[in-house]
Amino acid sequence: MLKKSFAGKIRDFIFSSQGFPLLLMFSILGVLFVLFRMKSVELDYKITEINKAISKVRLEQKELNAKKAGLLSVNNLRKLAKRYKLKQPAQSQIIVIPHKEK
Image 1: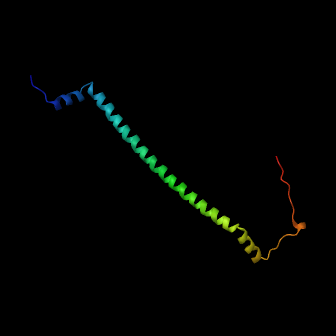
Image 2: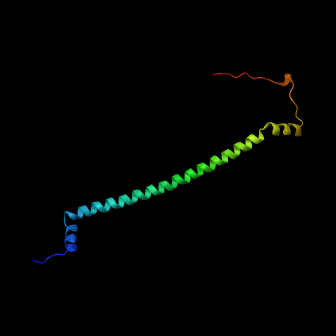
Image 3: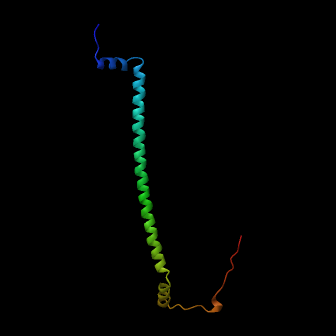
């Protein structure tokens, strides 16, 4: 009887009715693993980009809040009032509107 090499035995098993379904199953599992891993990496990149955008917007918000505080400061409002020749209102000019509660 002719002695088969190890590679020959493997080849015979892979192409047999028992081995081929196993080979096919492991191949499909390998492809699915790679696809899921690629999707995971892609989602990680998107999350990183979104986090960078959030950080940028937060920094911009802080800068705008600082600018708003500067524009609404008492000293700035007094300068604007002086420039546009505004004065304190008389008591008769002040109207208080009561807050309606629902």
